Length: 165
Image 1 (cartoon, one colour):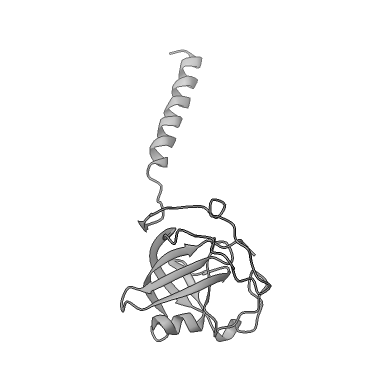
Image 2 (cartoon, one colour):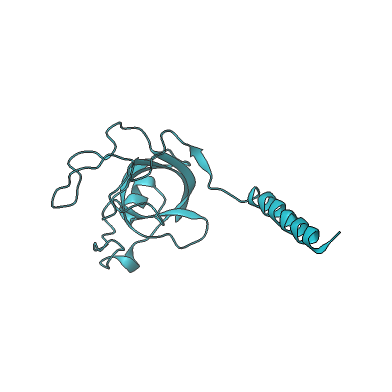
């Protein structure tokens, strides 16, 4: 085997190994995907001065994305401090922190242990604890009855993508 053949063989072997390893990569666990839309694909909406939507960003009313995982909550230590979107955190409002969802995204959460539900608006970034998919305000945690345990397995359904503000 000449030197060019060896180089070509090694390159080919490297590509095959790379493709094999790429197939082993993990992916998020989706409970279901009804009509998965990105925030850019969802119809835009008008907003009021308070930032609430006058027209829905999801006029079809379909669930845009469903995930399952562990939710936690944050309260006293952050109450009155600025959130990632610039608002002042109010532990008594129905808000949440998510790592990537656009600010303003509306999410329905269902506690899988007791069936209780709540709808929250994403206004912060987090959670920063591995294994958790969303951090809730104290008010939202109370609605789901997870304050005592601190965490709960939840179903998270995106009802409306936010505009990122």
